[in-house]
Image (cartoon, rainbow, N blue to C red; front, side, top):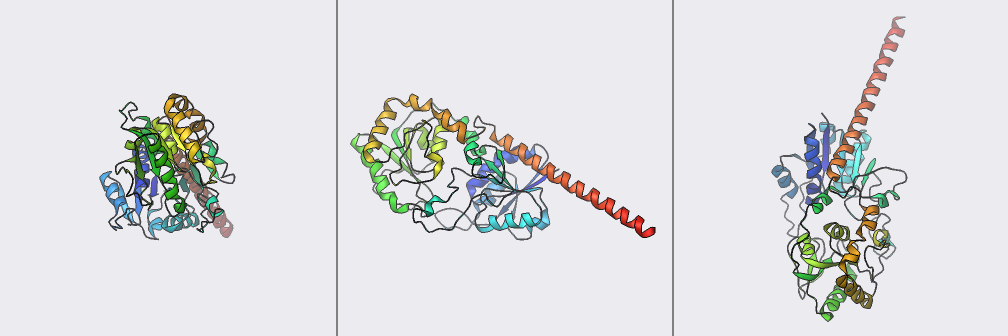
Length: 358
């Protein structure tokens, strides 16, 4: 029986892992969550959401402590962030103990930290450079890990989108994703929102804005949506967004998307749409793009496959099973290496004993 230690940094990481864990437990694997007991919400409440989620899903959840790896000795450590805080420390400790480390790409990533070129003074992250294995969303990601073991798993979080009912009645013309989180490009947020809303209003289209939990833009003068952004996307005709995984998720849900990038972000993920969505850079072009998509949405929906085939593997609903299968392979390899080491040690011991006797 294999033992896997998952270290979700925030609650949605925990939710992403659940379908994988379901596949693993079906194969008699032992699952443990480690929780640093910090919640990720706007109230700064220290009650652990991760612990509550684990309990709800019958998963053992242990508070983080530097000794947890030594005590539990898992066959693999799985994280969705290896560039900061306790997860980074956990990965470093695991590597010293020869415990395989796996990083699952949590979504669209700025692998090159291009925001630093634009003057945003943050730490250089180098995401997923510290783990042994990188579970990538799609082929596009692998180019950033030439010296790493990469596996195309897709995202378990995307599996649910395949089963969503697509033919629900639309309530809004435009869903707007306001995601200027962690201080990156937040100085551009107000003008970005104003552009999108003013264009919508000039076309007499109704809209609703979904705000990322880490975004602090003042939206008090706009129409906002306080429920799941996925419900908003499903109930809207078009999504307008800046750099965000939501662009991919909208396509998986089956809704046309517009990548509005007037501030010239350099993150490469969406710079080449492969014909799957418009990428306007001015207010005038945004207006034209909205009209074009609204008048012929199926034209764009039919082209989703070109982008998704490069950026999302296993997006037909089986990513969780692929993820679990690859984890078991890694655990088996570790077990074989351990057995090989023990065999060599035993032989060496026997040879030494015979030599001493002789």
